[in-house]
Image (tube, rainbow, N blue to C red; front, side, top):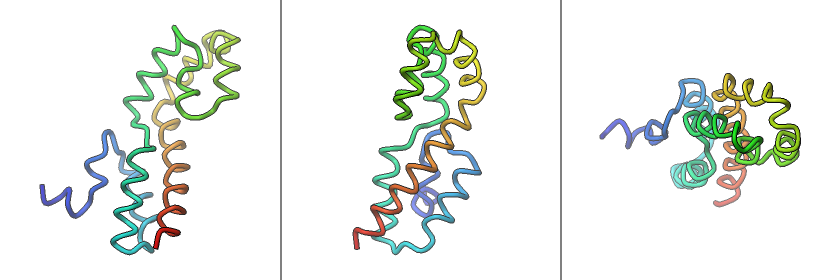
Length: 120
């Protein structure tokens, strides 16, 4: 339990070493209050790789669902009307679900950092 108090990011579902390192590096300049605020915002916006795998698999029935979840509305519409780019795009998304989640999470970390920096 003490490990989670020292590093709350370890409690995030499916966190990778790359994401953990990125978050620790990104929040070094924040004070303790800002770090807590950052974690609160970031944990709400973050997508776990396992969730992205599930959304990508369901994307065969509802093409583009994984892209809508990531906030990529244009790609979601394209996938929807082309049946996941004839299922090839959906297969690629299943294979690359970890990188899709990491890319999204880095964007959310940047947004959360900006909000936390402005908070105090």
